[in-house]
View 1 (spheres, one colour):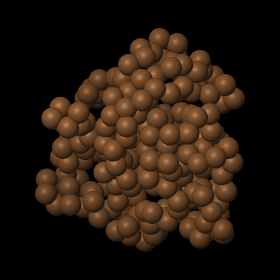
View 2 (view 1 turned 60 degrees about the horizontal axis):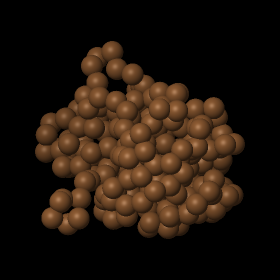
View 3 (view 1 turned 45 degrees about the horizontal axis):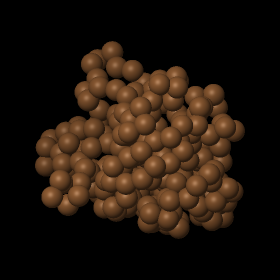
Length: 230
């Protein structure tokens, strides 16, 4: 895992969808974040240890490779893995702060533009070599040494979706949602864009939301810093 330092940043965007506004100040405590998205190999250890149901296998063997992000997992699956690993899902604010990699005002994790040599997106199979999920670490990391914060797989966040949350968000360590949602759960936030997405999906401020799993949806985890380390 990578240490993400405490800090303050401007969350949101003035050029994106309306739910990315208003741009607002957020202050976060330090935390650890997985350097990579959770892979099939990681997830299989969880399944074998707990007996948790397997995600549906794909007819495309590329999705089942051990070194690519696990996909076809819903929010509950991701949260269950995180609990087993003594971690948790990142809040939406933690995810965006980490994705920005210490940069200010950039659209993407490393710059204001993004190309097929920077991330896996567009389902092209051309310059980025992979038409579907790519092995983790195939593209350059951001300033915090995090890989695939743009593209490869959308990533579940802890928060429930609220289009107006930015208007009422507290400044310090914001989060919105219940730890374990009931059967009639609300949409949960996804961030980062996936292998089939457009450049707009890959923006650090872009927000998507979903209820179920899909072949473009994966996750990574974070972990709180023990008080003795602070």
